[in-house]
Length: 263
Image (cartoon, rainbow, N blue to C red; front, top):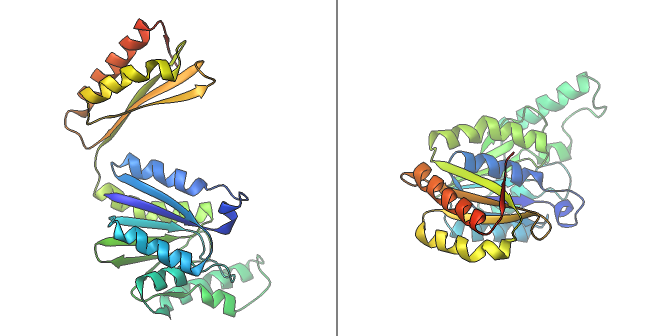
């Protein structure tokens, strides 16, 4: 599958909060052989959410995952923005309402919260785009949402990492496993030669193995440590191709008087 992630939140754009959610999800999407095509971050703006969603849908991904903006405050407008982008009415979902009410009643009984009842702000989280399926939030209060637009499945998840991870594991991971592809990654670290020095030789290997993605990543300084990684998705004879490419890369490192680091 082709997947895109949309993270929503002013706190990310001003640097107050680091977007660890996308990194966490990217590793798991890739692990099951699916391609994460793009990660987009935008602020809490109704028109921005609506416009960006339409732009993503125009690229026809199989799955869109959004995080953030599902809370009770005025700037949590993800659901309204997505409804606008899909040209759907936003309506009170009774299942979501009951779930939120139950969560707050439980929190009140346990003494976690003092304010009782379903306030306007709490009820706000139960208004979902028409056609939505609410996703249970076992860690927090705001439910997630699943909906479909043509051939694209959209998952709307909370931005709180613990809530997002719980929902991702419960709902999205089984889908990724069900349609699992094949992803392979191999690599090694070398020292003594810089990235620019080995670059033309790596280009030759890439031309010989167009099915593979071969990338160097400087780790420390100009030439103290460089990591070389070889990755591919759903390629026949992938292990053999990757191992051959790595052998050639290691031979080049030795010929240039570099050293392979063993970890």
